[in-house]
Amino acid sequence: MHAEAKQHDFEPKIVAFVCTWCTYAGADLAGTSRMQYPANVRVLKFPCTGRIDPVFILRAFQKGADGVLVSGCHPGDCHYMAGNFHARRRFAAFRALLDFVGVDLHRLQFSWVSAAEGGKWVEVVTELTERVRAMGPMLEFKSLEHEEQWSAFQALADVPGVVNTPELKEAYDKI
Amino acid sequence: MNAKANKNQGSCIEPSYYQAVTKAIRTQAVQILKEGTVAGLVGYLPGRRKGTARPALITTPEEAEKLIFSPACVNNLSVYLTKSKKGVLKQGRIGIVAKGCDMRALAGLMGESQIKREDLFIIAVDCAGVYGSGAERSETVTEANIARKCLECSVHHPEGADFVAGSATDLSGLTPLEAEEMARIEALPQAERWAFWKEHFSRCIRCMACRQVCPFCYCEQCLCDKNRPQAVESSPRPAGNTAWHIVRAMHLAGRCGGCAECERVCPMDIPLNLLNRRMAKELKELYDYEAGLAPAEKGPLTQYREDDDQSFIK
Ligand code: SF4
Ligand code: SF4
Ligand code: SF4
Image 1 (tube, helix red, strand yellow):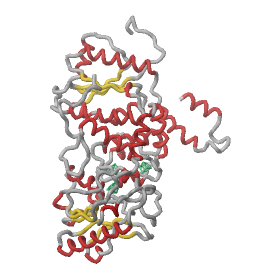
Image 2: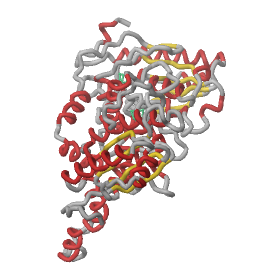
Image 3: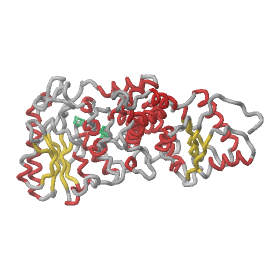
Image 4: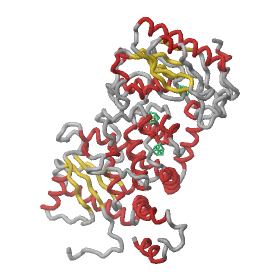
């Protein structure tokens, strides 16, 4: 581990959906240039931002991400000509929908990072990680998942002594 | 028809108006079936219980004599012309009885190359509103029992149809309940919005009625049914339900015509049309797009401009 690395109480999980042509290469450049950025980010590579379905973002949140980054080529630089223009509209609409449903948009970041912008990649990732760290864990979607696992027991909760035992309660609270 | 007689002033619409529309539809339907303009016609027949109506495919002039239009004609018949209800269109040119909001769906389906205008004979209804949920089917339509979508309908004078039954309905001056509800939710703090939708979504039983009834949900395989890999859990549990509702609203953004059929059929009374309307509002604000009466080759999310807003992107 890097000598200056600090200890934090909470390490957020950040999932980054990036396009292979620009942002992935940009992140690669940051790496080969030995720039430091938070190890919290898990990079997933896609052919194009146009391939990044909003459902991936939902899935990431459901499965435990505290923050999500979507990043691709600058407008006009798309390897497939217009993929990022389409993605831009789709994500503008998707943000509005998430907002209406009550998701905090500070956990969701979009950016354009080119293959030459290793520095910008570091900046974007660091900023998002620190912001999400300050916000704490994303509980909304995770609590839905937990309810899902718990609901089968809850259905029997009225039946005394069957499954609603203190041990199970305790186990559940630990999840 | 005298314009004043059709005014819905929160009191009632004359039942005679619906009778006149029924008569006009019958005459026109009989004529086009006799002349062979259409091979068949999708319209409404009386339901088995008094005051109800049911969708039907009509192929003979005799049957066409039984067609009706009443406030119980709530269904959006355009769903019968889509891929998901295979077969109806195979029979050549087809007639369809459509209210204004149904015509939006027809226009959308034309824009998405699902149906061709020349394959249709549209008998439009200058619409005075239909029953809302729970309305007693013997009553006249009033502001109290009219469908919520009709309270803020802007398309009840249909345009671009082959024939229009009825005329000069007036639906002005009604309280826009949906717009008010949407504004109320938008004004809530974020956590309360989440709580509001969480409660609603958690009740969903995943019967998929909202999908089956929607004219735009014609995908042969719905993303939400896929399980290798699975995108959205298919069991009626909180996580999968939330994902389903977000995906549904997203897939219909820029396409939904606002017929509110999804909300009408939902057995759990989930306010689906609020999500639809919120997306429609956003796309209007961002890209000045409105699902309208004219078929558009491209929707707001299948096109782009180089100078689209990107203030949310770093
Ligand atoms: S929304 Fe408009 S066109 Fe549709 S049923 Fe209501 S009044 Fe008629
Ligand atoms: S989403 Fe609902 S309101 Fe929109 S077109 Fe489909 S059924 Fe109609
Ligand atoms: S109709 Fe209602 S209960 Fe059924 S899947 Fe749709 S939202 Fe859920």
